[in-house]
Image 1 (tube, rainbow, N blue to C red):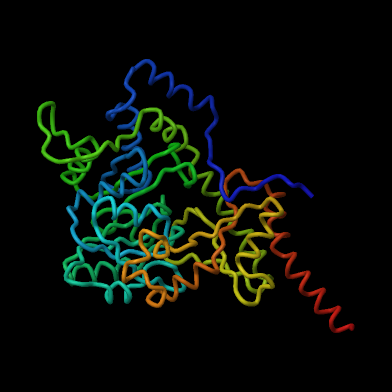
Image 2 (cartoon, rainbow, N blue to C red):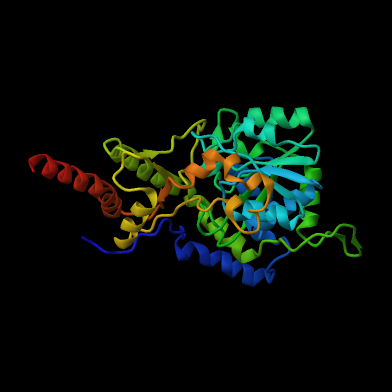
Length: 383
């Protein structure tokens, strides 16, 4: 059997001969950043592909999220999920907001609307949900809560590139949504991010904030940051965009193969895809239950010994990290579902270049502990 290392993900790279003409264009233009022609083209093409009105590109998804918080001038507490990548909560700290963690739904692993409502105080200014693994949040319930309490909603949509539900792109919901275009994501620009908004006035404000707050050559009225995407990163996005549908289709084939194989593996339950008319298959999370012979961490180690690198997304919970663990909302007793799921979820490798042989190797490795347990039971009965 092959011992080639299989990573949990692998970035898609367009053919080099398709990337180089963009590099040559940069050399001809001699414009490397500050909203150059490739940057402007990618903003337009991505907005069109994603089905959104306005999209502002950024150098990374974290700065995009921090800028979205600043654009809405949020103060005080922001309710968010503990079941996410650390950038979600870190952005709040950078903007001097206080994260308030609410529990998650046991099926979708997104913020539970009832837990959001219970966490609201007079100091709450916004809700920051995450479309976890690309599964849409309960956006209608969250909008209803926000409207009744006068709160803003920013969706961390780092996992949700291209995802639609019956109403269209889920990136159009809330007051703002943010994307990550990091190398590990479905669509990447090496490093990158974006903020999606619904009106040109907000787009103008976001563009000013990501460029130090500069209004014109002599006018700076707000304390912005440097969040601009360079031309070389935009070139990567433009070269990759023609391939994105094929990449997502291949991810879908892998997703389907996993789901078919897991039907006869007790204790390994794939997360359902709910409310999506168009998925991106960004992750393949499985919940390791009591019927499986190994617990999640033991399975992680067994796969790792076989050079199959999975990830325990998300473990530990954000609420368990030292900079957040002293918050009242971080107590595990108030986050029972998130605490349990952080011990059970394992994300399996999925990326467009994964070969069928590697896919079968992963499936065989998942099945092996079940077969070993079955043989042990037979021996015990025979004894």
